[in-house]
Image (cartoon, rainbow, N blue to C red; front, top):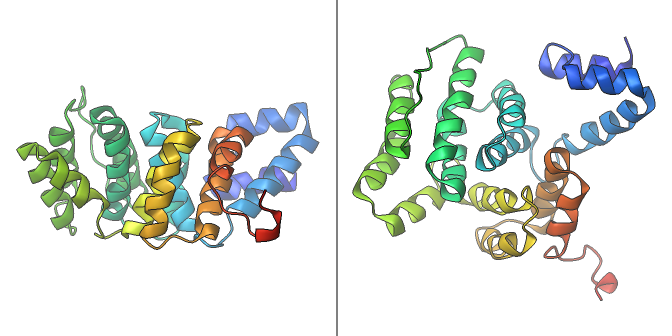
Length: 244
């Protein structure tokens, strides 16, 4: 087995079909991609587990199940609890609404399966964010769900201003990471203009330019090189002398 295939087998416990096909058609392309992925997913300004959780959440925000599930595994394997992961997904709700919570339930149920606490997903899934969050809280009955319960109360009260503030404030997850997440939600849909104000808010919440650059790198993995184009427009140059 090639080193690239071994790498993905270690990451996912199996070689995904898309990886095997890339290898079959061009081992050199897979080796190059694996090198880029391996470099990006190392601890940097953002940790490996933060990167996995952020990618999972950003894909929930754009309703892309496959990458959401892949990176849910990484987030759990590298140390996040399920309530922490669920809190990341609240930023997907701010971006896309009820559909994002509905999709996030699949990731939360998969996370519970990974830690040997399997649950049965209902069919159909709850359609409203309030019902979906209530279901997730019931799955996490033995965990710290106080923050999720407070968010659920604000959803039910339809207090949008207080809800947005609560979701973006520090909880189990820092406000800094949540604002970075929101910027990434726009970047993976190639909306740099929409991401720009969130990048400013992330800076105000304590994010560094290196943090923002790491968001751009992980967005490349899930949305391609154009994601970097969109983020880089609002990223400050590392060397001020290169600013135009």
